[in-house]
Image 1 (spheres, helix red, strand yellow):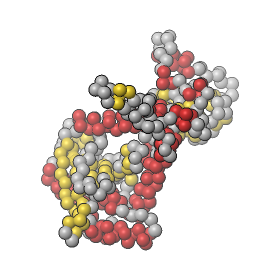
Image 2: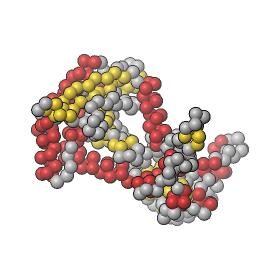
Image 3: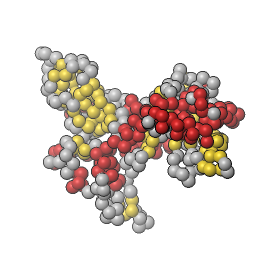
Image 4: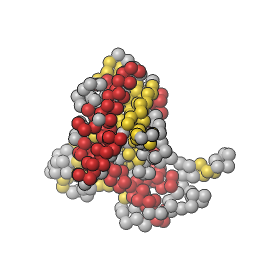
Length: 385
């Protein structure tokens, strides 16, 4: 008898939501068939069967589940039927008593409406969406992406009367609940500030030649190529010459240098902050195509953990025209993060500030200056990228 258990998908979440079963209870499945979807605070991930057999569900859609938890059993001919979830949980505790019920595992389906996942409910409460509009969605399981599309279509209520996660604060203001996505961001930022002794250096870069090159490539390739794509290519190209900016600190005396660059890039289209990853050293046109796909994923809420996993350095993008300087947050496990501010006219030049926050345990000020100068040299003379 085989098992389907919850994998560990990321370091930001201690539990996920079982969105839906892709294989019906009691249906035959084959090895590597997608059988269920899990929603983390930032992405949706498919789970596949690990062997052939008949799948028997143990957890209902909309339930919260933790890494290692048993979701289903895959039986073979003559195998006994699986235990119900309560019995499985009781057996796993070893104390003979079932675990306490959690109110967040009650599904809307039991009340005659669609199942609303916990991340979706967090966003509903945060935005103050009309529950009737949410229940009218033509889906069996309401996911965070469904709520985002509903909000974009104007489904919100007047915020002065919104309920859900909002109530009156002690000082007479309105208390606003935070989404699970934002709480995950908060945990990462808090951990970064608490554990990484960060320093910061910025450099001014003439981006005139870079903007000319990207405009020419956009016309020639008939796809949008921008300054951020060029910066990603520049950063990736420096992996061999400046390896400690891609390193991970193992302990106070040891660091691991990855074999190849993996550049995480911030994308925020108003539906939450995502940091998908560009792996290796792809050509500039391929980076532009990858970034266009990432923006579509952000817009439609279709990122998976595969898109978001594996970065060893980060680039944060600040497109608003009045932003001249930004201090990026170093993700735990990274050595640094770069921030690209909006290009600004300066006399007969166009310049942009590139900031570098770095872990002082791995790199010193002189190292940061040399790294930024190398980035500047590539961006100002980009013909070979």
